Image 1 (cartoon, rainbow, N blue to C red):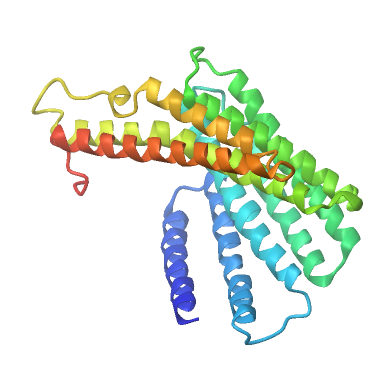
Image 2 (tube, one colour; image 1 turned 90 degrees about the vertical axis):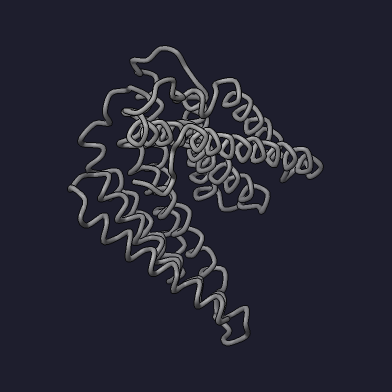
Length: 312
């Protein structure tokens, strides 16, 4: 119990630091979405501590499921969803050379998702099933709206040659769209709320959407930061420095994407075909090993060319 309280205190310190940094940043829709994401992460703490107290036998809540659902929804849809939405406003046009997201969309999307989630949260805790189903449909509609808009923007990119990062973003948005559609169906078809369907929705969100976005951005962000800091630190003193492709080569990025795609294809049907979880897990582990090896390789290349990771 003490360790868990210490963990919660650590998260509060991180949240406070991030919140101060965001409040000092220039105003914009990215900042607004990220602030809402931080508030969602903050909201997971009391529910998490209440669940910890229940597991420790300190109290017996009337409805444990409501606490667990609220904790998960704030952490996944509120924290992860809003964070990705806010980041996408900047990184998709910048890294994929696409048009900007429409201004009217960026002004309404994050707020609409946060409000829908807040209504669902109140309905779940107060045991108002009809209101909860309506709010769940609202959450699904907003997520589908974001996914379709992003896919449309990616289709209008000015750089015609595709890469693994583009494939990851498209896979992420297709997974989010499928997750939103299935989530909406579960809201209007109460009889189909089986554990297998819920597992499928969870895997689409975590592995298909969130993990694909993280993987795709790592392929761009790590090489760019390594190259940028190398240029700033030693670029004026020597020639022949590594370029961005050297830090994460295209053939490695494609291999990384194919392993992740294979893992996802095997794991999604595993709620009904349990034996697929073993090869799916092995492919997922293999993709993680490829990522770890390449990140270590990028770090060693950065250091070998005179870069200092601790120097700003």
